Image 1 (tube, one colour):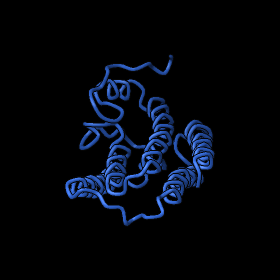
Image 2: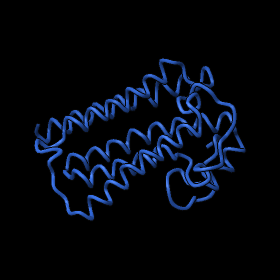
Image 3: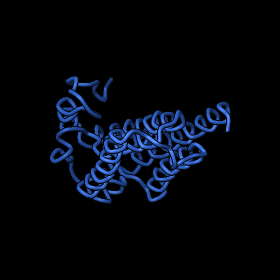
Length: 192
């Protein structure tokens, strides 16, 4: 595939992510206070579109790409550790809560003390490891695309959490960073 096709298809994945997260999922949260089964399934579809995009753009030599041994070790540690942490935080939050089907309290313990989005951060770490193991510009592009799709999801979830938990969520997001690093203090309130 050529670069124009890659960019066009990446744009379509971004548009699909926008429609799913910023229109349909947002509507579910506003109307019902949770996701419908359709909304939850569409969230998975957005992630699967990214997986499909990343997979079909792998170099023809994949997985026979050779990298230095130290890079391979670090890549495997990040990949395996990231996947393990993704599933651990998914199950710690609970399947229903992870799919937006259930809202019964704001989680602030465990990995949620370090980041408001441990599943996204952990999966991103896994994909960085994957990119180290099979480096290509396509895989770097897939990381950028994943970050954009996840960010749309996170923005929608944060709007919902602010609506449901109000001041408690504002205090939490003032203390804990969205992804990684140091929290920048209070962010714009829902009135902004």
